[in-house]
Image 1 (tube, rainbow, N blue to C red):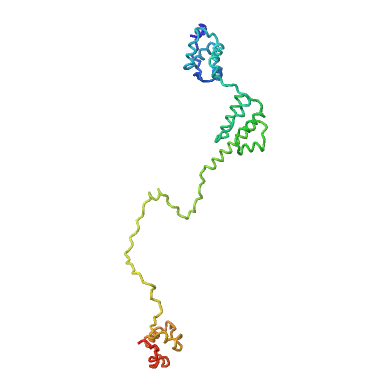
Image 2: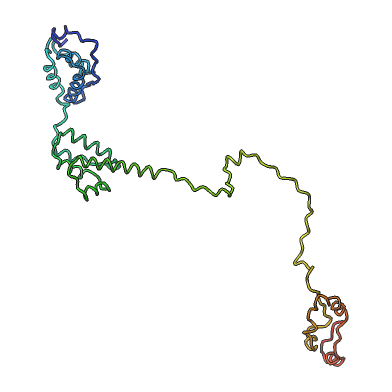
Length: 293
């Protein structure tokens, strides 16, 4: 084993919990060491204990590298840390500079909440303290919209104020979206008006049978207007051209009142007396029309 005899003789107590971080050879070695130190601060332990627990975080090819070290080569945890960094130095992330903050831009369709979390993580990663540069980078990276316009009209003084206003804007926008998606109830109808049955209610409700109606024969259809209250019909026995020359023809053709209707009907049955001045044998010989018999 690469550990010295002094490290091999130390027994790890059962109270120690193995670290939950792992390293497969593709991660950043500095980030792995930081996570390992954080967990070891909670449980404590000497450098000898840390050497043995650090070995349990190596997986795959990293464990093959550790076993390939010379026997008894590792005598302390700082020495093991130095060997580990040198072996995986190619996996280290390039050092960040403050101007990398301006590369953080809000994507199309990304919410303000997601962009704010990503921007704050980059600020923490770069360990920036310049408030003016942080605020300028945030205004440059945010997409045009109501919130960016509010930052232009009322410029904040600190990045903390930007976060406070962003949180209030996110909460208000979420409440408005909830209002838009809620279902508006319909106004109840009047109590006196019967409510229409729904489909499932109409199908489940018992159908009432109609009472049998007595048979009524169908009346034959009447042609034209009914002739019950129509005035009496007058049949003329003379032609119209002969009636024109009859004196007082308009008075004779008037409909008699109802009480004289029988007398008028009797007069109608009598033939019309044509004066001799209207018709004579001479007029018939001369070609004048004679009354119809």
